[in-house]
Image (cartoon, one colour):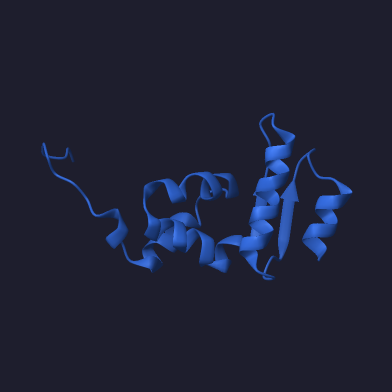
Length: 101
C-alpha cells in the first residue's frame, strides 16, 4: 500500500512485544547501529530487552576495532543472559575474557 502524501506513522507507539519480535529477526549489528536511529523508544527497547542478546552472531566488514567494540556492547546488553556467541576473525583473547566475565 502506498502512503498518502503527508501521512506519517508514530513508530514510537508500536507495542514493545511486537517490536521485540521484529528486533529478534535482526542481526546484532543492525540492532546496535539501526534501532536507535528510529526513535528513543526503539533504542530503549534494543538496549534493555536482554532476550535479544542471548544469542549473538557477528561478522565484521573491515573495521576490526569497531567489530570488537560492537561485540562488547552486545555482551553488555545481554546483562549476564548470553547463552551463545559466534563471531569471525576479529575475536581476540581479550574479547573472549570479556564475554566470559
